[in-house]
Image (tube, rainbow, N blue to C red; front, side, top):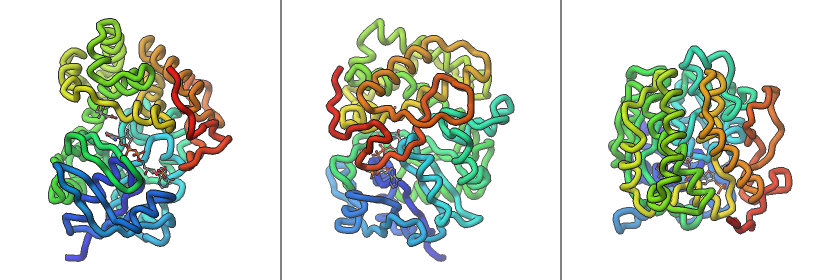
Amino acid sequence: MSETRVCIVGAGAIGGFIGTRLAAAGRARVSALARGATLAALREHGWRLRMGGQLIQAHAIASDEPAALGPQDLVIIAVKGQALGEVAARIAPLLAPHTRVLPAMNGVPWWFGAAVPALADAPLDSVDPGGRIARAIPLAQVLGCVVHASTAQPEPGLVQHAMGQGLIVGEPAGGSSGRAQQTVDLLAHAGFEATLSTDIRSALWYKLWGNLTMNPVSALTGATIDRVLADPLVRDFCSAAMAEAQTIGARIACPIDQTPEDRHAVTARLGAFRTSMLQDADAGRPIELDAIVGAVREIGLRLAIPTPHVDALLGLTRLFGRVQGLYPEVLRATQPDTGIGLSTCSLPAVAGPECNISPSSKVRR
Ligand SMILES: NC(=O)C1=CN([C@@H]2O[C@H](COP(=O)(O)OP(=O)(O)OC[C@H]3O[C@@H](n4cnc5c(N)ncnc54)[C@H](OP(=O)(O)O)[C@@H]3O)[C@@H](O)[C@H]2O)C=CC1
Ligand SMILES: CC(C)(CO)C(=O)C(=O)O
């Protein structure tokens, strides 16, 4: 049986976590589309993952040129939401007609609305302004994915695992398929708790239900998750925003049959955890606000569902991002102002003036 060709686009904390384990498992030829220090580290040291007190290493095939890597069986995209537009424009050489594309990312994916009649008439402005991602990555080649894990990248090319190894995979329109099962089997063989969902959109919405408040509130305040949940006023604010997302979920066939307090109990198990958005803010990196909060506001607007707490959270965190240079102001697409910034500028490793981000900015709260 020929080796499955897999390319990791975005060899960071999550991409490196997945890439290292797939490469070490030996059932796939795993490459990475990487750049700068990450590319150099992969070429020098290969894949590296610290997990369970061990250092897992594997040979890495890495390039900053997609054409050098060629057509793949599976492309796993693990970039931050604001980088997706730029990445999608470059990955055509990785895509053959049979290639599966698996976005291992948080937030509302660009394809999410295509499966919802009330949203299918136009792309979500907050995550795919002008629809360029949808044009670059055919929906027929996409598999949905939810990441239930936490990892960090202490240095380029080295991943530190914190907790969890869950990956949920499913067809965007729901149901099951051979290609989804094949992807689950490959991930499971590499050691992940990989499962197939016949309703990946609901699984995405449930994950987002936690990220929607924990990530921005932690970035805004500098608080770890335990401290966010320990403050009664903040906890109640988060619950109110989550209730708004629950109302939206009911309208888009993503029902959540838990209370916000039930979800808080699950999230509290993370303890004094710094969310990926807080880690980004503290590191002076752009924050993933549009896919995690902006998209919820936009869907509420499109469905005429009031979201006052989500709106306040977006407004406060976006202003924080703007002041700290963590929320790139970009050209707005032709859509009317939905009150959402569009992070479509290219976000180089070393930010430039066009994105108004200073990598050396020390966040002041
Ligand atoms: N970390 C975590 O614990 C969790 C993260 N997630 C989600 O997973 C997704 C990825 O997050 P995470 O891995 O933490 O992010 P990281 O910032 O660690 O990794 C993103 C990677 O993408 C690379 N990248 C960005 N743009 C390009 C480009 N144009 N070409 C090549 N490489 C590029 C970055 O490289 P460079 O350094 O050169 O910019 C970086 O290596 C996000 O949606 C996040 O919310 C979900 C659950 C938990
Ligand atoms: C908080 C966590 C680990 C789980 O919700 C997460 O998804 C993130 O940090 O982005």
